[in-house]
Image (cartoon, rainbow, N blue to C red):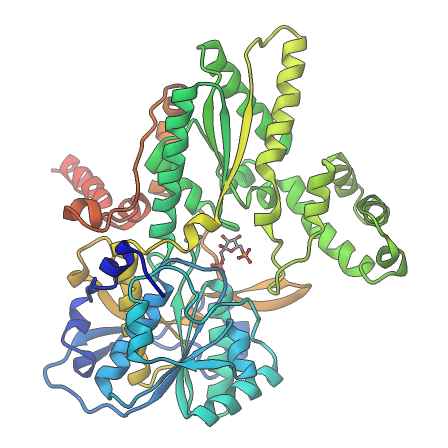
Length: 571
Ligand code: FBP
């Protein structure tokens, strides 16, 4: 296969490792920290994970003497949505494994978690690995969203691993996939199977983070890609001066992506789902606030602008959230009824659902009835295997444009508005998930994979590969492992209480949201647009190795500066 010039240069890029891993995998020594607890439901989780609950946090350092390490075969799985850098996790793992012994084998299970259940796999070779270094995408082995939770699935995993003599499995995924990793680790340990399981934090959504995990991989590249695109649209907006662009940005629940892109590009409007929920805003209130900005800008002669809308907004508007919960319950009951199955068109299906909702949840029935046909149909689409509504398929940006248009027409009729409004809807999501990883993601992912191998060599299971201090240069990054149960809570899924890794939503008291809040009014009315441009892979350090604003504000220089300024006040 011929490759692009950029790819041929990128494959030569050698990712940088944290200091503790730089001298090679044989010299990695483990420092054991304190025992841990889950973030909530400690008793329930302790009884659900009797073999892996409460393990200590681990940190790696570089040992003096190289150790002899047992040869082993490892299996790896990519799970959930694509995120830039996934290939480098596999490659870091491969390189570490081959440093231990050239005869060690790395197997890639195909198509996500179902690959290890159905024993579909490929064996990596140097040639295959070398052609995927620093590339985007998950096409090397593919991905999937199969949930691993049943005894019969675990039995098959065990049998398949035995057949290939695999003693370690690395699951690269988001919160749901790392929950899979925790369940599998516990089950295999309960059977003394001699197969350890390590997770790696992946998701462009940026919501797999906590006191231990500073960011998930893919967030850096995806947000930089979207920021480039939003910046380009802003430039188009001030050039043509005739459109309002409504840009929905991917990120299933939390608004980390939207917030980061807003800080990089300064759009006129940025909706934050968590804020909408906290202020219990209705859809009408959101529309009113957006319309106010559009009218004010129009009075200044600006009939254009850019609004950034989070993909998951719909689930955070209290009346819609309630509707989705009630719809899930109604659909579970109605879906298999003869009446629903025999319905040949959407209107009849809506009628059946509406009938049921009117009896069980009349408020939600009213909300459902008020929605445009397109949105009603999208709300009834299948949930994913983890029970999540597929928000990427709901056209929130179109819904807002049509509701704002209606409101502006009403204002026009009352003589309160005489501007022009022409809305353009965009959805940027899939465009960013397979981009060439930025230097940050290339380094971070390679280190995560290499580090996962070090955890397996240390005979650990039920851990997530953890690299910290990410706003510092790579040599100062801290490598180690965080017990998966430490990040867990219990939630209702598909009507049952299940252990899950807690998603991190945007912290409305945190420095990242505060930064938006402090600038919002200015950005709404002035055209303070920023144009970050494309990700750069070659050039000055501050250009090619810049991290996200989110990481900088939460962990890095900006935060240190703030503390330093505070300290100075007390001097
Ligand atoms: P993960 O949580 O698995 O990383 O997936 C993230 C995501 O990209 C979301 O932002 C988006 O809503 C969803 O995947 C889309 O899923 P699909 O690829 O199945 O359309």
